[in-house]
Image 1: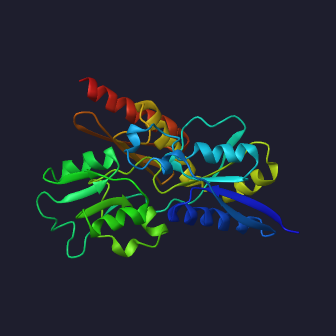
Image 2: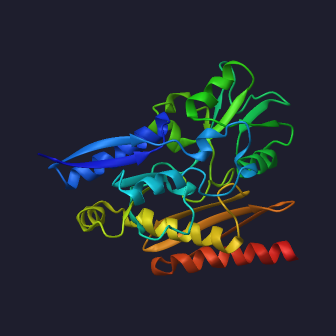
Image 3: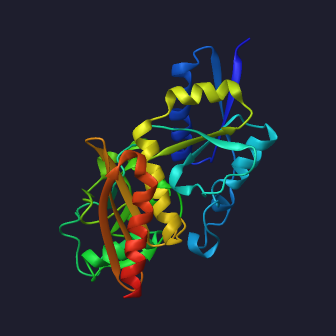
Length: 295
């Protein structure tokens, strides 16, 4: 009988697609196992009438899944890395991060409209303060509307109340909605959320069987980049719902990063370091912004 690996995830289309990607990665190194996907409802899924910053910080989409992992109901937890708190519950560890999908943000417009010809005062939906502050820096005439819900729910709002929505390219690609993209923001236009596009696979520390498999599927570039981006968030004192963004890239054995934070105005910084100093780079850029805010 095949060994069954139970993968725990949220119940949205995107979350299930992400769990399937994790399952494929595990199967690529453990051919003899059977993958079973278990869906779990989190606090962030249950409270949909409030914006995320009003109902708590990081952990809204992970705590119940982590609980199931600790109790043995599942063997692997799959999270969007940007939703994961820095502190991991005792007994759990980060097993692997997978190759990063496109990290940028994109605009999807209602039929007949494009980002270039969005009318003055157009209603643009997003649940993110980071996106809102950068959108208004590009077009102060836009009306930014707070929205919640999964990718499909947000796209459906284009049929009724919105002229455009801003979503992560990764989410649109993974739910096969990329054909609806009107415009992908450049890094100069909009810095994405730290760890956007990265999937995290969490396991129990004592699970030596899965630990070995995780080492084989770990994407080293994504792992280094998330360390720099999370170090930036940590130092600046921001959770995943604060108006902060960071994107690191590996180039010529160096790590480059651009980061933003909004505190009454938009602060943008960038820098580079040797790969082994990824976390130092994140901290350094955060300290740079803190100094600018104080001045």
